[in-house]
Image (cartoon, rainbow, N blue to C red):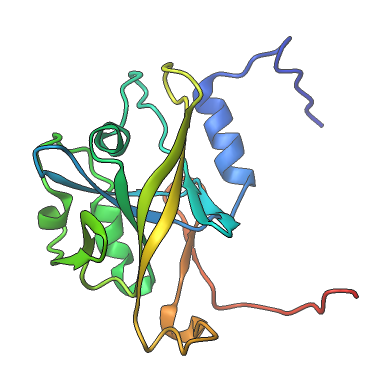
Length: 204
């Protein structure tokens, strides 16, 4: 058995990352499009992600500083244009999502790198992935930065102002998981499919 008092036995950031990402899983993935003030689009996946409020509808995701202590393009873009589009990615697009995790120069376009067509998103200047079955157009609600050191996170709180969802996925009341085919993130290079599910009735 291992126990750590982090004030007495600090762990290196890389070790903490492996421990946290390996135990807190599976994690849903936000595929986030942003845009800088010059109109350059960026698209990147983040697995530190979830819904954090329903009324108002707010999503939360957390880009980490690079190992060199630099901010990701997503964070820099949000400071210039406080909008984003958060996509949910199913199995059909997971290869493209993985391609967009590549480190590119700020002026390079991950949409183009992955061969993805752009589409407009109501109320948002930032484009969405045309092929994505679900997209949430968001305005920046708040950003909480946990430092500038390597691998420090920035918690982005993004308020949903518009929604695109494929009619094959949503009937107005229920999401068809068999059509959406969501994927989750584990540690390292591992992903997971939602193909082995079970149900438990909540107690009264």
